[in-house]
Image (cartoon, rainbow, N blue to C red):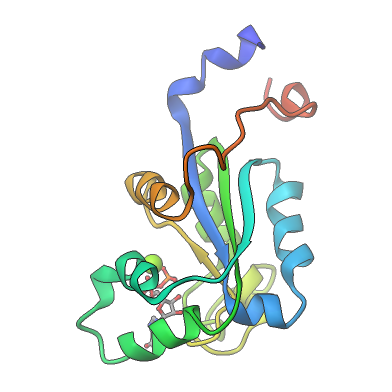
Length: 160
Ligand code: IDP
Ligand code: MG
């Protein structure tokens, strides 16, 4: 229990970050996890998982009327994904910046998609787009007991 961290607790968000099947197949798991670790966010949950079709459809339900929706569902269910819950102040917006634009050709160099991908339909990683969706997606992809409550040994070196 670190009393100096409690003051900022109300700012703490969680983001659901997922390495998509192309990221797993291309051997980018360590590289992608490393970027969030090095930034200083807190890993609360992590698993390799074969996503069933109904879960993929629920996760992407806002896109169900798009022409690419069936291909998107095929893509996400085509092999294992790495599911992650990351916590931190401002983690949702910051993770979106680390990930880069949806179209990897428009993503800035230095971002995950900018450095590691070339096409929207194979853009290697997902990140929640709002704190509410972060909560919703983590509840969708993780079961009770799969998340860890812990304090990193680095905590007092990351925030004053
Ligand atoms: P985001 O992942 O950057 O939040 P969204 O617009 O939420 O982007 O789209 C979700 C995912 O759907 C994208 O990451 C990408 O995999 C896929 N997608 C979005 N637009 C297209 C498209 O025009 N063609 C093919 N796939 C797309
Ligand atoms: Mg999105």
